[in-house]
Structures are given as structure tokens and as C-alpha cells.
Length: 248
Image 1 (cartoon, rainbow, N blue to C red):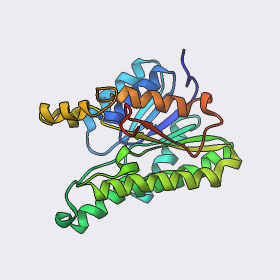
Image 2 (cartoon, rainbow, N blue to C red; image 1 turned 120 degrees about the horizontal axis):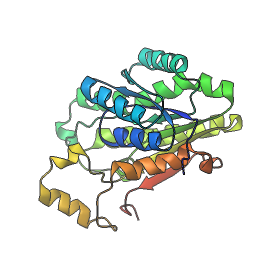
Image 3 (cartoon, rainbow, N blue to C red; image 1 turned 135 degrees about the vertical axis):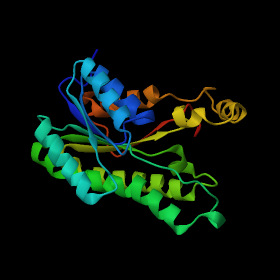
Image 4 (cartoon, rainbow, N blue to C red; image 1 turned 30 degrees about the horizontal axis):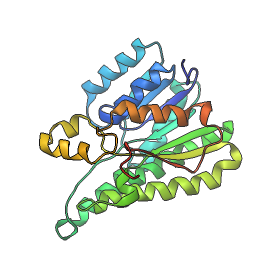
């Protein structure tokens, strides 16, 4: 059963990893997909072709969500290219891990800018569209690290915790207009990035998870399908941990 037929979603940072998984699963559920990428032109083109082959309208946009102006331009362009926008998934993010004593100001500022300010930029840019149509689903990608912290990731944890506070505030502000704002906090998700980690490190992670496995991009995508579909019409201001039980 397709749960998103006729809807359109913007997904930031979708050329690989979790974002790519979300875009693919959304298209499988009948959702039209507008996605952004920063520099991976070939990967973006390949994804666009794959999504179109699934029978939906799909288009990639090279855009920097950390730029206030580019975020606004993106929403304007998507509004012209698609009939409407129903879902925004703020997925773009980076890491620059280090212990606080070794972390430079630039590495802190850059992670906050890309991970947290981009959520403000994109939500601000799409707010007018959602208010006008009196509906919309905002889905922000945080992390279990944003809930519990993690040594060596003070900048990343701060950005992801900030997303939670931002989302809950927006849920309170926009709920009366039928605009919902929720957060997904992924745990250890196995992507191209984690594939480069030593096997013993990955095995250690898996062993510490109650379900005894890492998550997949599809696991996160399925949670996004729920929050983007009409099944979650009475769900807002929530943080959904998709972590195999890590925070249990």
C-alpha cells in the first residue's frame, strides 16, 4: 500500500546515505521528491533517474541548506516545478569530531551552521507555503547523540539537541494551522560512511544494541513515511528514537 500518493516532499542532503534511502522509499510510496545535494552531481543525477523510474516526479537541486538565501530560492524553485509541497525533511548534516580540548572554533561553528541553522533556514523558507495551504509535515533529523550526548562530539551533539528544541517550539507555534513538527533520532545506522570503520568497531556497536544490529537507511525512511503520511495526523512535537533500543 502506498501511503504518500499525491504528496510532494523536499529532502535535504539526499545524494547518499540516510537521505538517499528516504528519497527511494518515499518514491516507492508514491511521493514526488525534490531533493538537494551539495557537490555529488553524478550521484544526484543517478538518484533522480531511479526515482523517476518508480513513476513519480523527481528532481535534484544543488543547494546549500546552511545558506538562508539558497534555502529560500530552493523552496521557490520547488514550488514552481511541483504542484505543491507537503513534507519537508531536514536531513542535511556533517560531523567534525574531536575532544573539546582539541576542537577549534571553526569546527564548532561549521557543524552548528550546517546541522542546526539549516533547519531554521529551510523551515523559515517553507513556512509561508505551509501556512497558506494550512497543512504540512516538518520532519527534522536529529540523533541519539542529541538526546544523550557523546564524548568527542560536543559540536554535533549540541547541533542535534538544538534541533529537538527548535522542533518542539515550532510544533507549539504552528499546530493551530495544522502544521506538524517532529524529530527522528537515529541510532547507529550503517551507510557508506560506517562501512569504512574497522569491523571490530562495528561489531562492538552492534553488540551494544538490544536488537543486535545496526539500522539501515530504510529503517529511518519507514519512520519518515509514518510522520509524513496521514497516519500521523495527530502526532506533533515528538521525538521518535529509531535506534534498535540504544536509549532504552
